[in-house]
Length: 378
View: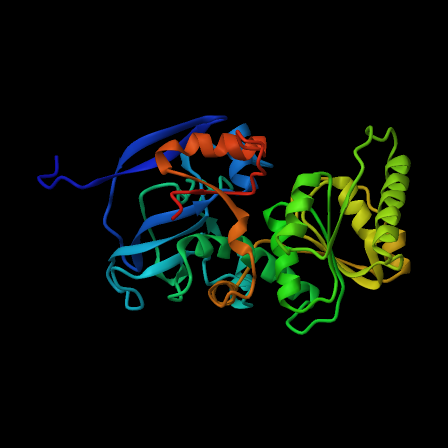
């Protein structure tokens, strides 16, 4: 037994599907190159919810108790040996991916594709790396980003999903001063951030499509989209040909409603749903781009001829690289008006299970829309 009793902290730990436990754990001091952070705010996302509901996210199953959460910000409480860029009391955003900095992708500044990436709250690697749903965590200092004075903890937690869109926008060539028209499939947090970023960049027309009229009403009233369109809910198509035909017809009706029958320059597909991925190809203008941001459907039947004949580029996007400074600068400058409205609910860490159930329902007790649930948010 050690003569020195180490301090303890609390964490919300996932053991299996819907088995989330609030536990006391030993708090170890930060090691070489690490800083210890008191986590102030963590936003829940779709991958967290998949782990909570099913004990897995796609192919990645939880093999040992795992702390979820990766959209977070907090306050540095201690620094380990060798840390020069941070001091206790400093407010930081936590970039959850820990890259190796030595593989080919890291050397090419594409560390989001790092072969040895360890991502906090992901079960892809084993042993798993715990996420941010804990009172304090030790994390490499080089992926902790100081916050501008005007950036709140809630905003800083949104820097993670915003980074996803910054990376996707760079891949699509969508930059400040753009004259491209933008269509977004999905009016959840990621889709709304796609709308917000496109508007901040000056896109003359930004529209959103979803199957949820309440989310679309929010998107328009909060100023994220110029126009919205509610996609029809129908029976499941019996054949792939029928599904492709419906996708084309449904999106043609939406384009007609927008008065933009020739399509949009950039299409962000933020749902991961097969019908929306199919529609996105037809929604893109000749010479346009489709950005696949949403994840969900493993194998998709695509109208590739429709893309090839019109030179529509279909691009993949995975996480982000070198985006946090830009994301925090945008948030601190107020460049994304109304962004705080994305945080619809706040729940204390000890009640994390309720936060996951709230996100799963998509509606609160009063019937309000649930978008971003912030755990421990201020």
